Length: 362
Image 1 (cartoon, rainbow, N blue to C red):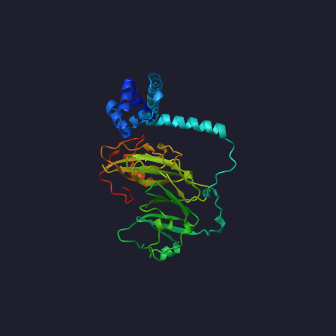
Image 2 (tube, rainbow, N blue to C red; image 1 turned 90 degrees about the vertical axis):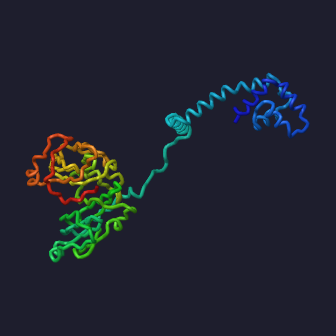
Image 3 (cartoon, rainbow, N blue to C red; image 1 turned 135 degrees about the horizontal axis):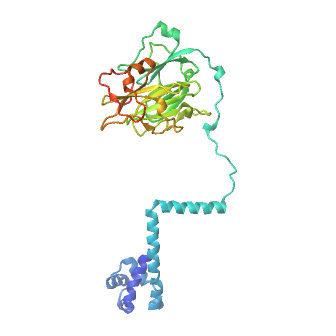
């Protein structure tokens, strides 16, 4: 604004006598500003500024002193605009000002931050009855905890139309459960938090039981007693990430962890690598009918939960991974022709292989 006024004053410098003559010869006061605008080609704001200058200041020396600021103002404006346009410059200025403020006013904190999640969870392990159970999870998110005796009486599972069982675990009532969702989150609970069910009922709807967000669905259920072993996340882009289960262990009562796995590529499957095993064979197939059988020891474990992992399968254009599973010794022997010693690998053609029946998330 100041520069704009001085640019108008600079034009007056070209002919001070003309400015005085316009003011003197204008009959009505209200016409002074319009006449200055016409006489010097300046706008109303500039003309108002000139018209308010005292008569004794309408001389070359005064106007020259004022207009000498124009070059400096232009330089200052250019520097400020350059700073505003450059986030790095702005951050440097903010950092410098904050450091100066901290130096001037800083003093040791007298209070501590304390969150509800920092409250250590009381161990009630002894109060939880321990007995064998069968856990079932359906594709649409229904969960059942059934005792062996109840399962012997009726093993035919009641399901909603077009639903199917995607996980069946034989474990105990004290086991801890991790429910991974399609929004890269994991919800932690225990089998004991669910009531006993029967095969003849639908069971508990996990999204409602654990308070999942709208549109959030369960994609895998993992059971662990001590958070030993690793999880293998296989993605559609041919990458796989190996993450220690201990990365999901918490000493507090947190029930939900964000960034449970990478969201850079669609998740195909979460596989649990048993603790105590140095390696186990994992079979990966693409929608282009190529297959790779690799040892999990080829994939280094990463402490970061949402790591993108390493490339295991080299995919051809427009193809994606569609299946992943850990094989037992018999299966591994039968599919040995797809075994690779290094990764990434393109794998071999697998047209004659039957479908695994495993749940995929594509």
